[in-house]
Image (cartoon, rainbow, N blue to C red; front, side, top):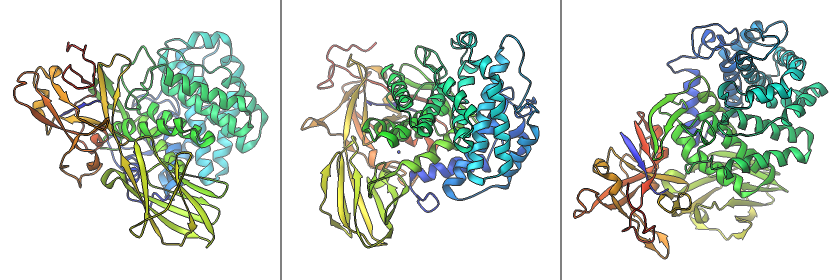
Amino acid sequence: MRFLLCLLLSAAAVSAGNLTDRFNLTLKRVTRDGPPVFDEAFILADASAQPGRRFTEFSGDVSGRYIGALSLAFRQNGAGSSLLDHVVSGAIKLQQPDGHFGAPLTTGTVRDSDMATLWGNGRMLIGLLEYYDLTHRADALASARKLGDFLVRIGPRFNSEEVRTAYNGEKFAVGYICWTNSLEGLVELYRVTRAEPYLALARDIAARTDRHPSQHSHGFLTTVRGVVALYKVTGEKRYLEQAEAAWQDVLDSGNVLVQGAVPEMFAPQIKRDEGCSEADWLRLSLELWDLTLQPKYMQQAQLTLFNEMSMNQFHTGDFGHHSLSEAGYVPPFAHAWWCCTFHGLRALAAVFRSVFHAQAGTLSYDLPVDGQGEAAGLTVRADSALERTASVQLTVAKADGKPHDLRVRVPQWASGVQLSLSGQPLQTSSQDGYQTVARIWKAGEVLRVTYALQTRLVKRGGEGRQAAVFHGPWLLAVDQATSPAYFDEPSNENKVSLPETNGKLALKPAVASGTAARFAVPVAHFQLSYLPGGYSIQPQTALLRPIAEYTAGPDQNELDFWLPLVPTSEGLDSNYKPK
């Protein structure tokens, strides 16, 4: 099966929306499912750099990711795992006397094997600290400090301009980002211990962070998130400005694709997506939103969450890779259990924390997914059915009997939102992109938020030769399983019809099949009318549906997301000639 993407997403334990379902799917994959099964021996193989599975040379990579991802997941849903505790204990026993994990570093000239070891140790450092934040186990913190002290000792060697120059080219997986990725762990270690050497090293690394062509995007974006963390612990505005500039540079450089994906390698080496990079871009955007409340960060986060992040998640719960072509996604694909699955779980857990924000006693609902928010005297739980009814249910969990403002953000993909209580519309005020209700709330009241979803056309580049269709936050596609004739040769000469009403796209809704299916988005199913390239005298229709439904599985073989536009497509490029 393939798709043709056309014209161009708390209480987790009690909510039942799409985000919660996705979070639980990946959590189940990491804690119970396989292959491969994440048992203690399998996980810790890299902490001792023993052969037997992929990437054990990246010492502490899988181990640290596993520890960190489950720590954040359990912090979100209140669960726990004895296996996680055993893995942490086992990892501590494998720590080398000098504080690092895995094979010894070389002396003299830095080698690729040294950079691989440092990458894994960076992942282990933040993983141990995230576990400590969950459990407050003293031995986990002691292990993290021992590793931090090791990094401080080797800092002068790896902060040298000689090493930076040698490894800041196209080394990719063993590039300089293997050293800089330790930044977020060092900052967290300083936050917990207030030991100045960790902060000093973090500052040095932040000063040596830059983006360049063909770089590993995951390593760079992880480092930029470390810069954000550095701002949070120091309050020094220069670090926030550095992170914002890096974010904007990625966007302006063309490295954010139409579906919200950041490629595994920055341009010009755009070959495939990567679940880790998508998770980093999502988390970075949400972190900058939380700090600045600038709409552009929330817009990018939603684009990535509802499209690339959702599509990247396989039906197994794994995240990973899909190969990219000029047209979109093509075989092969990879379930990247060694990195992306863990990083995807971390990102989904983080999303719940950005659903609401509280400011000056006002509670704002920003991201239309499941979650819980609190302001002084008011607690509200969100249960999203956006993909099925274009609505979200906000339940007042606690209220103190005093007046409170509750704000709902109007996203750029909706023409407005309607708020109702007990079936009756509520009077709202509009300001700064929010609809606000001011009243005395009562525990148990249920507010319904309904979004007026827009269908819109997004053109690719300045040429107007290709475009994409979105409905609400979702990028749409032609599904080969239900519309196989659309892909008959020469499908690149199909002439699509994109009717407009009052200057807006007005596609005909389709009766959604399998609306009860997991990860279905029935509110975004439409009919696409077209004239087939091979027999244009017989008009046909195809089913458009969101790429986010890919997770329902089994894995699709191909995704092409650009639909060529032709002279008969009203209002589009009349000079385009199909190749």
